[in-house]
Image 1 (cartoon, rainbow, N blue to C red):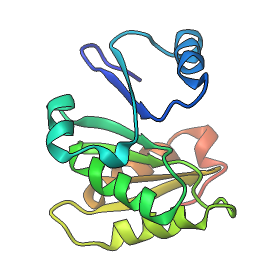
Image 2: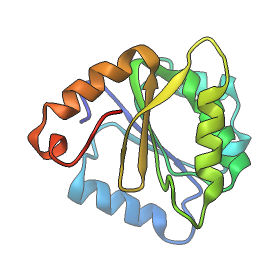
Image 3: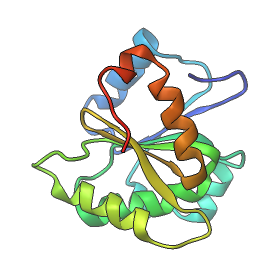
Image 4: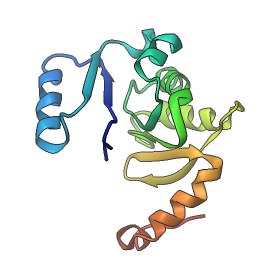
Length: 156
């Protein structure tokens, strides 16, 4: 899904041999074009530091961070301001019974008032998809227009 001129940014602790494995997986299944992998604890990143890394903002944000409530809420709060208009946030391990803090943090994040409010618009397997409220119907109609999704989903 990477468009011409876009960068793919990855932030992770990358423990043990996961950084070389991540690079190998990107080569095999994705793209190695304009990929930047940043190693470290994202709880130590600042808004100013991220502004320097993402001046153009994000079209897609996938969060698979720590699995405790405070870690997930911090990641959402830190990275959401960089999601561009029409952008999507994908939360990993949502509704995993081993990690109830993820679901609680996502729901609390969606309830907080701020200049831009994100809402869930689609759920699948262990993922929850969020967007700004005014985009939710657009994305739902698009997804329901896809036969593979329409026959296995519903919108309420």
